[in-house]
Amino acid sequence: MPPAKKRPRAYDHLRTRTAVLAQYGHVRDAVSALTPDQLARPTRLDGWTVHDLVAHIALGLGAVSRDLALPEPPGPKPGTTLLEWAPAVAAAVRDTTAPPPSAGHPDLTALYREVEAAFLADVPASGTGDRLLTTRVGSMRLADVLVTRTVELTVHTDDLNEALGLEIPYDRQALAACTRLLADTLADRAPGGSVEVRVPPFAVVQCIGGPKHTRGTPPNVVETGPLTWARLATGRTQWARALADAEVSASGERADLAGLLPLLA
Picture 1 (cartoon, one colour):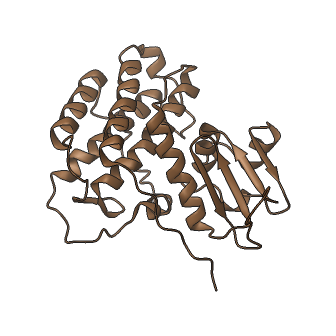
Picture 2 (cartoon, rainbow, N blue to C red):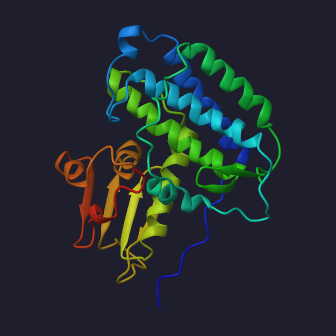
Picture 3 (tube, rainbow, N blue to C red):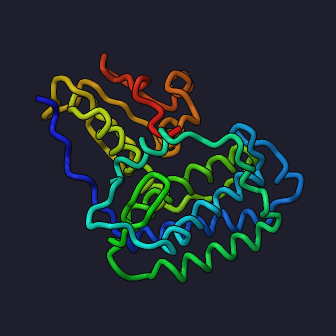
């Protein structure tokens, strides 16, 4: 029999909303101080300048308001669950003919202000987040969409820091939600109990079929930090490189995630 999949992790909708706004605020504050020279610099995202990346971050949050303005899709269940989001995004084909994200958005300060005002108006600081939205990867619960925004915001904050040598801070709750979703996605993709993946202080999951660990020190352990885990899961860095740079520790003959990464690229 295939390994049984665990019950999906629950996220507090209102705490996630707060985390999204906090991380967006960190980026907004940094963007307001960027110079034209900084905005023109390249990023590790193929063909994108910092201006493109900054616009994309705002538009990614703006998609929540855009999708909320559409008629609610038929329910009651979402077509795409939270653990199906990363594979669905990874399978989506990027339209290389589309204009860059910065097209039509020369005033980034105004863009960030408009997106934040719309989000505050459209996503109330109450409720359960059960409202269904039509997204590019299928219908999803609002609460789940907000968890995906923590991934987008955290990963792209790291992209900005890498491109510009900045130290834009990471909201702890946003970083935690990002880490847990990506760790749970790995466990869902490769169910089992032979390898324990630790991303302290936010997540511990077991994955990969084989002899199941029950007590004592696990024979196969992978451990890394939250930002390295996000980079591995999204293809920003490679498994072999992270091992060589001592950003990941892996012990045991099964502790090799190279064939399972990235989860979202």
